[in-house]
Image (cartoon, rainbow, N blue to C red; front, side, top):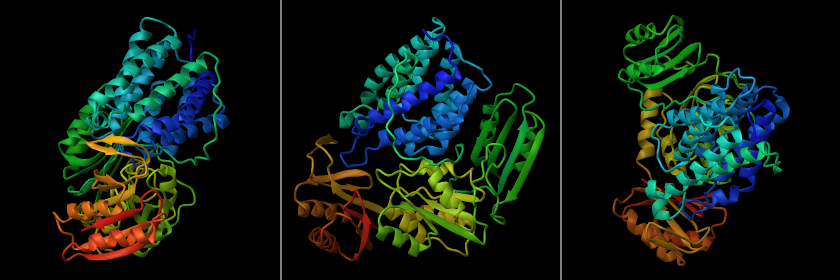
Length: 541
């Protein structure tokens, strides 16, 4: 029986949770809807949680508030991939609920679980049910209900795990992609292992944690989507909380009058960033919550050196290079050839990463800070890295614009559209448009037997994906490349670039080249990309 959660117990729970997800990360990784070797949810969750465990090793917190705060800060800095970011937000919400608490009873702990879920849902622009969000939400609801009946944190966690397992089993029915693949959600499965590790710690069981490599530190997270800037004034302010008005009312007001909205609130202040054409109206509305403590309004079409939300939450990265020019660029990729290609296009810094190798927010932030420019464009080049890149936006000492490129071809096309003489808004819009006009094809090998979207796939077969959808699989590369060429012919490209991977043979490269060369009017370029995972990355535009 555990009636009070102390700082010492919280530390033990977090370390056990990190060890539990580390032990089961391979199992979680394999719950992947595609049979390509990119099922890294377990690895990302393990690396993220391990950063918290290491921070607690050195932090020596005495209260549950301090332990939760150290954990939340470390997880946000070390978050990797979408699953890691969401996990970090679950703990961030918990930390806010337990702020200033010496210890936590079952009710406070259960409410902290629920606040973590709220933080995660708020940060995800389009929450999808049948994911870790659903599992964590229903687990937290069960925890709150149990806490009202029993002053025992062990029982609260038991009930949460039981409800989470039921929710996890149902994810296959809630998410159409999971249903087609015949699997449950990987992030939800990982979360259950985390809760179980925490419960086992309360019962006195210590799970030995395997080291997964050092996770470097960095910062915090606020939800920010740059979007297409259509409003003239970048308006930032801090208003004191002098009444009980709900900050969600301010969010709704801003949503009708601008974009790129960030509202961060705590017990004492509300911090806001918004792009709007009506800054006066926005500030007038803000005054209904309390006195304005600071205000900054800049015309984005004339000035491009402003920071994003630099108040108390910002932790400036060390060793920032002094800005010497207007624009800079950071690209994420892996492979000597791809790195050379992005450098030739103007990338100042390369962050090593990609499929199965998601860099942390700190990795990206460190690269951004090393670029001697006022405005730095970041190209994630993988859909699972975009959220981690966006976390660097409010943390940097300079203006950061994330171009949400989901593949290497999109990143290349975006950088080709960059104009050093144009303003930030024009460049952002042009690069996003260019990235959206590229078709990306990928050829790899199936990592395991699988059945997906009507395809029966066998380990070792060639797989061809087109624009994130599985196109064809088979033992014969000639048949696979022929099917790919046929699919591309529906909208004949003018330019085709093939990036060959580190394991692609000359014979395979020639076979692919011949298949795509048959497309009428297409100019074809073959580049040694040297990337792992994918034998070929193909850009068609």
